Length: 221
Image (cartoon, rainbow, N blue to C red; front, side, top):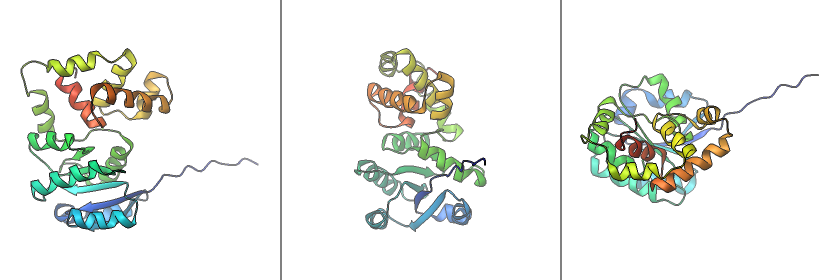
């Protein structure tokens, strides 16, 4: 008798903060229908979020960019500083300067308002897994045009990577997942994870979005 292999998808335990825009889109219902996402709570503030995190494991926090900017930055920094910080994703169109500040405050991805609603659950799962960087076109262009010449400091750091680490850094900046990089480099996903960790250490950054920023500023993509 042949026995089939059943592949299960781990459920993401998610909390939503500041949900005006998200509620208007009906995303709460959409997310609840996604089999691999469980919305633990929708809360208005960091204090309320901390209460949820005290009693439940939160894998991912989705924050509405419509909340006051000072509150948004404070929440992102506090979550990044937490001992077991969840993946933080911000949803909404933001100026480039804010986008860049959020990235270096520990945000893993920014989902722009033009993203098709049905794609959002998949985008959230990709962000949690360390996949594509999702920001609006304006922010990407601003990042690439920030200066007329490349940032020599970032270029020097990139040049300090070995050949395989450079390939990984470029792949991450292009939004490739660990699985895609493993296939392209003919290595295991565990090896890719180790290489990504090495790249973060050498570039002195703490997440994949920051790798993309360094690579872009070095004028490598």
